[in-house]
Length: 295
Image (cartoon, rainbow, N blue to C red; front, side, top):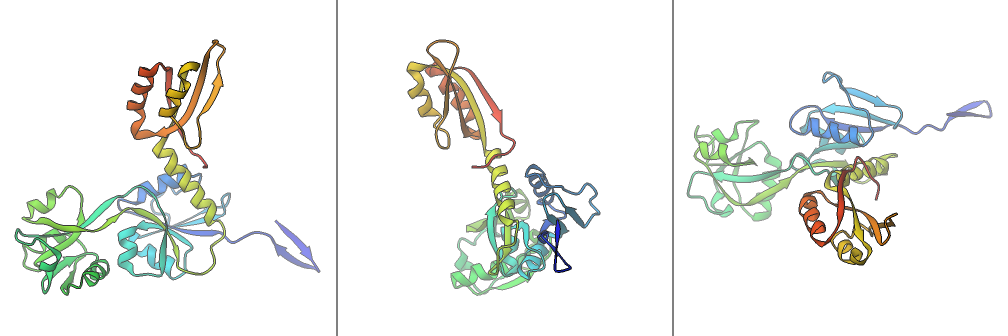
């Protein structure tokens, strides 16, 4: 849209919101899927590095997950999706805006049997792919150690004589056990995918809409709608089980003395909740997925 003022053309269009998205790795496809569910276009060709969604006034840049925090922190891009571990390791001038609920990992120390505490790492060599993160953690604990920066296969560092211990992402721990290593101490960090923005400065136009949409997807994934019919004399008992986020919707049925109830309930409790509702007299109990929502 544009208008002419004193023979000059003034545009009303706001600049596109520039969003960094992981181009590969474990965060890439879940991030793209969440953005699709939030109503944004996403690339179909993995070779595409930039995609413009003119309808939503955003532009997506597909980058290495480790680089995203740097681009956002420098202000080159407005918003980014990366891992909390990568943000902290980068030491960039970017802050977490919203946890996204996928890509969850734990970052921990491991060593051959014998190490039992973080204090045991003093003066030792520690191999890691996240030297910034580990250095900050050890600094907070007052432990001085030598960090060996490796890009991958960190679990082999001890066996090959490069390090005395490692700090790495731990899922089941089976890979570490095969390498003769044992996890010890508290987790360095519990990480997941997060939305980040540059620290300080003005909030970019369109950011709040993005946050609302992504928050709606997160809630939609965690909740379902439950519908059921119940005798009016049992409404208080049933709705105590399904209070909803604010309150349940109760509507009279054509069947005299009965009502229909609808509420949002946590997905993880849906099946036990159906059992409980049946036991108190509810019938025609239905569970429906939620595609999106605003709360």
